[in-house]
Image 1 (cartoon, helix red, strand yellow):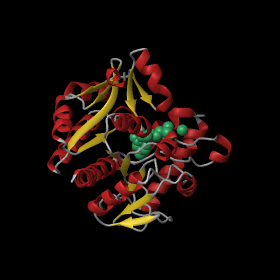
Image 2 (cartoon, rainbow, N blue to C red; image 1 turned 120 degrees about the vertical axis):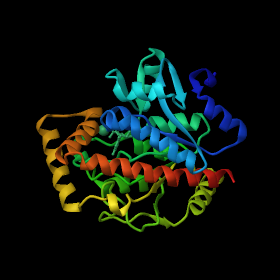
Image 3 (tube, rainbow, N blue to C red; image 1 turned 90 degrees about the vertical axis):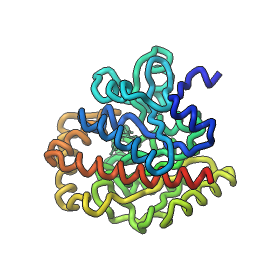
Length: 303
Ligand code: PSU
Ligand code: MN
């Protein structure tokens, strides 16, 4: 029954048969997180980095009534250019599939689809979290709830400080989601290598991360793990510069009464505009860095 919804690329089919490590990639970052053509170029380059590091990439999206696990170049182009691709989270999947509409999967939806496809490691840029002023808006990304229940390790560069990072950590703690610093004691904040917060645990190698993931799931402790991998030093942005930009983006979101699933894409777009593209360069660099680490973790898991 389930298989009728899933459609694998040839490369992923072969990887599954050969028991090769597979790394899931999301598509919201392509359709709603970066401008064209950098979005499509980055998606291709990230896939290539995963191959170079011994794993097979599986970019995930909802297209033509199917959950596609592994996308063609045409699929990537379509996701990068079309205006008709919905941002797809958990709640959107049944509607998009049953009406054959197209969706770019968020962290949440990508985790769900990866688990259905038996993929244990997923690489992205940054996860969603508890938004600032969530105590009045109730805006908490579904990504956190998904991490609480779905067995996929998510490699990211932390979360952007468009969010309340302290409340995000509290939420993850309540739901038993470990936040692991990859070679760091501090929670990275996407554009910066550090934040005022500590991670829960520090691990310094892909093998150690794989060992911890295995241990969690062997114990039946369902849910994901956040592997927070700091942006490379040379690509990090100045803390004071980016926090000013983020504050302005947040003020504009409020002014324009942006709500619901538009909030994050609006803020990402504003940050890019206000940094005159500097944030985009950083964003691309950190995703590539995460791809390398994710591929190594996936490779270690199948060993
Ligand atoms: N953060 C980023 N870039 C992104 C996203 C978040 O730095 O592209 C995307 C991811 O797909 C994430 C989603 O799952 O936004 C979260 O959206 P929301 O805050 O509406 O849950
Ligand atoms: Mn939200």
